[in-house]
Image (cartoon, rainbow, N blue to C red; front, side, top):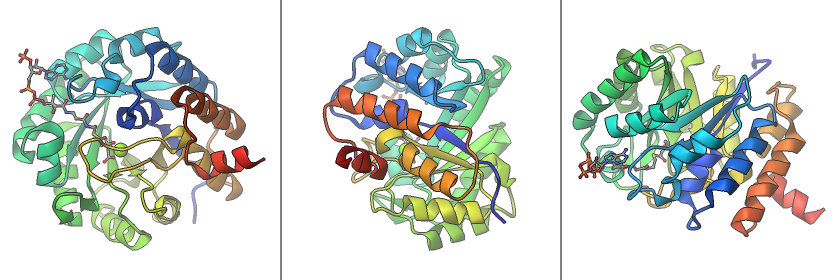
Length: 298
Ligand code: HMG
Ligand code: MG
């Protein structure tokens, strides 16, 4: 039986803009987030407090978090890799902190410059401090299906990492198919391994649509009891430290799917499409979601 309602978490201002060659002006980011805040979304990942040398596109995370108009009922989150990032994030009063690591050793090393084992104590400290500052914490696991450097990743390895994150006290784990390699059979294998151990309500799916399989994977996940999905307006997204990673599942495509299936999101489809158009105008290139293609052809 499918759920009546799901939560869609918008990651475009972070996952989307981190992967664009163009550095979007701070005021354009703020205006875009303010528009997204009016769509009915309850969760927006607004930026990232990683090292600005690694992701120069989001070097203005502090200003963005400080200057957006915060809509009551919306959680504004940001990525945090370490204690330096947490200090910056707390200064800007983020609502939720997102820590992250990879299930694959090779990607973790390239993405955050540490082995998985070296990463745990760093994140443990961040989670503890974030919690004592009253913040909720999300934990991302990247490369849950495949690693661009090491190939297939076993569901067991993902479970181990998820175990560690929950033991640290994260409130939710988001499972990232970083390079968009998965098909529904992979989702089935992964969730089969995880669901006996973790509450489905504490797991989110984070699909990239590199090979056009994101929506099929979303449906598979729904059927298996998942109710939280990450997406980016306009289908922006990708990880600069994962070769071949491209856009997230597009928020407007997800909304079309859910709403046509009779599943509530609380998010306005047209306002979301307008927000996608807004950032398309800023980036000055056609965005790749199906709904944007339909819009442009009308
Ligand atoms: P590092 O160079 O190993 O850092 O980078 P370090 O700890 O050795 O510190 C070096 C210097 O950087 C120090 O300065 C630190 O203070 C400074 P110094 O003392 O030499 O003057 N520093 C910082 N400055 C500002 N903010 C910080 C920060 N940290 C250290 N946060 C680090 C390690 C993790 C910081 C770096 O590798 C990094 O920022 N990586 C981020 C890469 C990234 O953002 N990737 C994309 C996001 S993940 C993703 O997209 C996947 C996801 O969407 C899910 C999915 O799709 O799978 C989430
Ligand atoms: Mg991602």
